[in-house]
Amino acid sequence: MENILNIYHAILEILHKVKETFYIWFPDNKRKQIWRGHRFEKYIVDLFDFNNSEFSLIDWTSDIDFVEFNVTVERNLDPDLLIKHNKSNKLFAIECKFRSWITVDNGKEGVEWARQDQINRYLKYGKDNNINVYVALGIGDYPAFPRELYLIPIENAKYPNLYLYSIKDFKRKEKELIKFVNGSLK
Image (cartoon, rainbow, N blue to C red):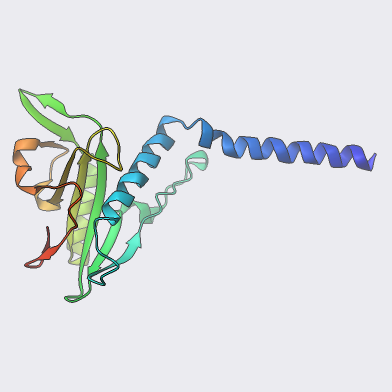
């Protein structure tokens, strides 16, 4: 009888592990979106020269919201990255957004990058913490290799839809390291 009970528990354990790994092999849209976001965040982190001690990565949100349990982690509502320029001790927050598509509205190309409540939250975060907040916006097919990359001060990204002509001054070379120039990230 004890052997049967051990086999039963072993089968339950295997089924539990299969259930846990199911979403790795067959992710739903929410998990795919989270995965793409993480890949793009990693891409942005790699554009900072942390090895040369110019910058320090202070915080990186986990984005773990426990989808299955319907729990929101408050910290994940803040921008994704908190970075310090070591020489000046200046802090910067960066919200990373990757989009695979460009929309066309009245003949103008644009990107819907966030909801208005998110934008308001990022603006409030910058004001409350007295730090500059940036939007790192990547556009393309693969988050680790965006076709276009923008580093936009949040004050220039106050609306959910950003027209590409209005953010052209913030476009940057995709592989160029992010620099600290005159108190700002470039």
